[in-house]
Length: 247
Image (cartoon, rainbow, N blue to C red; front, side, top):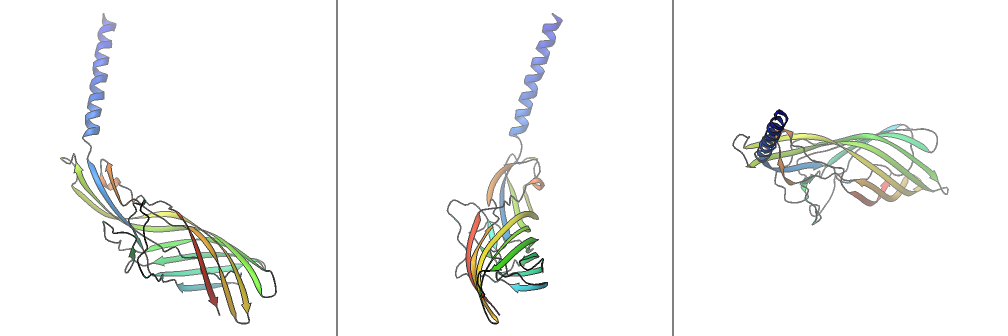
């Protein structure tokens, strides 16, 4: 009889635990989370396709768009894209055909474009990126040359987050606002061709890179709104074509 009595008590305790756990799960607060992140424009590397000696380059890659960037109908991202970005690159050659470089960039928040009507204001901080790259080039004729590069960067992306409790809010914070920075990897590759005309170099080519994205609106069940993540991912791959002149 004792075995059966103990078994009954254990079953009753287990059922009570499961019921209590279910109640606790149902009573967790539900937050509506709105996000807005500032990302860099999908700019190609500041490079003419020709390996050069030791040096440093500094430039301003202001993106000139007649209209703000368009967002795909299937996307639910909340992004601001920096319209003005400062670029720098320290480079050193290793032999006649290869070079290492240290690329960096900083996109400012004021004047940034909204890829879609964002639910939150743009973050106050700018977006900074830094990484390592390797490049190579070689002549296919006395004037014509080909070049290629590969970079790996880390982009520090600021996000504006607002969480509002919409269910089971009795013992929860009603609203929470914060700015966070999340590190996202950036991979960029380019292939260029150019021609040297005395002191002028004409070049053009293609570049590939991923463009970070996020989730603009979501509903999350969490104990504390401080635990909510900016949800910035590596994003889709962009293909860019461009031409330039170097004097």
